[in-house]
Amino acid sequence: MSTCKKARAEGICVVTLDRLSSLPPEIKGNILSLLNVEEAVRTCTLSSTWRDAWANMPKISLRDGNFARTKFVTLVDMVLSLHKGTIEECHISGNKNYHDEFGRWMLMLSRKSPRSVIIKLNSGPMYRIPSCLFSLGDLKSLRLKNCIISLPRVFQGFKSLTYLSLSFFSSTDRDIQNLISFCPELTYLRLTSFEGIKCLNIQSPTLEDLVDGYFEDINLDAPNLEEAILSLDLKAKSYQFVPIPHDKESHVKQSLGSLSDIEMLLVGGFFMKYLSKGCIVTKLPVVFTRLEDIYLVICLSDQRQVLTACSLFQNAPNLKNLGMLSYPSRTWDEDKASIQELTLQMQMDHLVTASVKEFRGRDYEVDFVAKLLTWAPALEEVKLEWKGQIDRSMVLTKLLALPRVSPRAKVIVT
Image 1 (cartoon, rainbow, N blue to C red):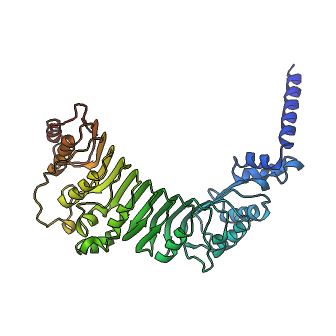
Image 2: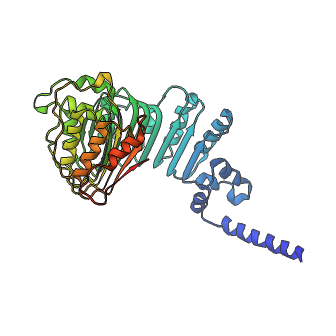
């Protein structure tokens, strides 16, 4: 009986194998794309019908992992040189040094006309992106890490690119401006941890999502932007105490005014400090009618920053969720201006949730929570992530005693 079962099982395996072997090359390639490249290449030993199947894989992921450097170089060279079909997505990442091979790999890759390219080589100095990579006319997604971006003079743009992510990179104001401007279909842009860029100039009518690292200044013209994460660098502190007549030179304020369709806005770093000092906002040039989520890095002891935040709230009549990260005042950024105690009467009719990270229980933080509870008739929850060193029970007593206009409002300390 056991012999019969074994024979039957072997027969089923043969039939199954034959069915797989008879599949079209593009389907075999899709199946092998679910494996790592090394395993996919090994399938060439199964039979003659599988010998070149891996060469039609539409997605290639090459990661050095536990590979010895020489073995990984051989694998990448073989895959890029022998691949026959169209590469939809190519991912090359590693933690070893491949500066000697990088130019060769990019040249071979450019000849395959990939639709999506991910390069994350973390070792050593930045890798200079060769000009051949900027000639990929069908590229739709590009993610680069640890690189130098220098556009060739003949760069005509990525006409089909919708997704661009650059991190830990070096470039210039002009090259990044041209790179973004020459991508007419761009909808997602992420620029983080960069050097060599002082004023980030973004003009993109199609852009919907923006994640920005710590810049010194920004000139933003993206009328269809829906979500934005903007952070200002400490180097922009030099602008803070310089009056800006009629705000004509204020790129930041003008940029905020262009975000008419924004739905989610996060401002970090010293963004609020810059707004409150160099160009204190009392009236923004636009009402954010679609803005429902705001997240701020803010010093709540600085009443100028609080006033600036309130200007944002007043211009976001449909705000539903407010998140803040509270940082304490430091000697170099103390607000020495004479400002009367904040007594604004605001109405935040649609606010449902609010949160404060790194809540230390200081009086100015408790006072701001008290104002939120009196401004928001639909408020359901205020979540405070405790980081204080003062008597927590005393602070909890103050919070519980705060009056609130919403009967459903809860103050939760975690």
